[in-house]
Length: 157
Image (cartoon, rainbow, N blue to C red):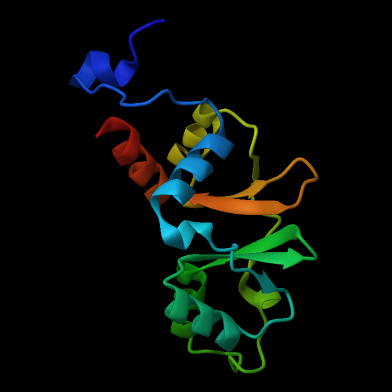
């Protein structure tokens, strides 16, 4: 087995065997954090912006997958909310819906995808989270750039 790049460059050594897929990242994060064990909080296209605002505040969220059934159709971030409110709220937040501010058809990743693909997408994109899909194409979880840093902390401590 070749010496991991992090060990060669920084002297860091893995403290566990690391599987090479997104599912492993999420499962490792879930094992380390009680909050990660709860179901993913989602919105529907017909939810009001005020409902999303409430979810962001009460659940310490930064990204909200928007689903139809269990299929991802969009994503709303705190940046989207800030943009909505900073535009002078041309629409009343009580009368505006997630479909009005969401990014439709966001990029997604399958849980069986290699970690390198996850890292590459998040490192070279303008967004900071990826919905993770199961083998049926349904939302399974989301992974953020913050999650990747936490994962690195877990396996390199």
